[in-house]
Image (tube, rainbow, N blue to C red; front, side):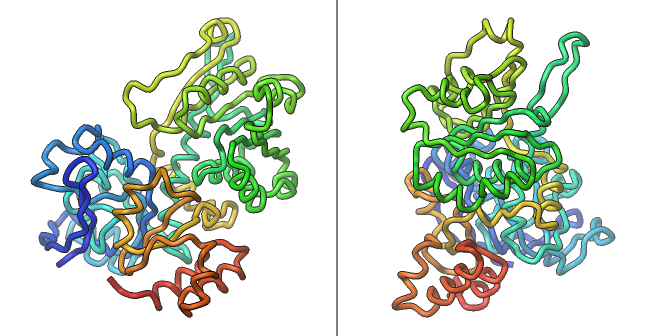
Length: 417
């Protein structure tokens, strides 16, 4: 079986290649990858190469396939797993199955940016190959980043000092601040916070990009949040002289119970620290590329105000299952996270330039050839290309965002790679 895949050979060294996969073993499963969404974590792995904790040292001679937010169809099942999986099943994957060896970083024959991959036994044993019955592949690709967001909400904790115990999760009915919160992951965090079971009563979302704030406010409305019992406020902190005082004023002058920091900026971490109320928990969600990244933290308040700090890197299988369930029930809409769509031949340039490409999630369909294209550009391109004209019309019918209808059209009509 031949596959086409984007492989990592070293720092900033990516190649799109066709090569043979070995025959699967009795404890492995062959899959056809359909969609993958490009994660900032992949950019970090590419920039760091062999120095990344999840990337092996030997990639210059035995490269690995990148991409870990993928979905597709099961093609062939090894004898060991024929009672649990069958050919034709759709699947989602939880790449963070335990050790540092992870699909998209560590393996030569499995990764999201491929046409076909082999799922190794260790991932299947860990119950991280999950059957998926949704109406669109991309929703399962986005379940992985949603699982990371869900993990963040579950990981926060609050002390019950008198009993020396901890209560896990955000404070129900409390005040949440999401800083730098209108990027792709921030949008998912807003969506989840509004529609999950353990909701805050107040959610304040900040950023310094007004265009992104405006888009977020259109996709995740104050009115919808209010229907779900959450007061949602968007704030451009670049227009505020004293952001900490202003943000506290939105909570009656009080600090926040839970603060999420969605960008690896020292000043933002320190702002989050200053926003914490008594017993508050700060979640440093954004993983930095610099291993020496640091920020000041007020340890006086750790001692006397019981401030807590945590961080998450990926979700677990239960988080992924929750993401798939919520998306399947229509309680969350991962489509809002997508701003660009492209083919396998767009992966290298997109990954290498990811921090400089505006917008939200970049979605890849691995069996097509297509430049990474903003959904907002479909209409303009459609003036001369009927393919983009049709896509623009489909997206317009779906509130300007990607959809199962758009995916079906693209898979049927896009140029094959």
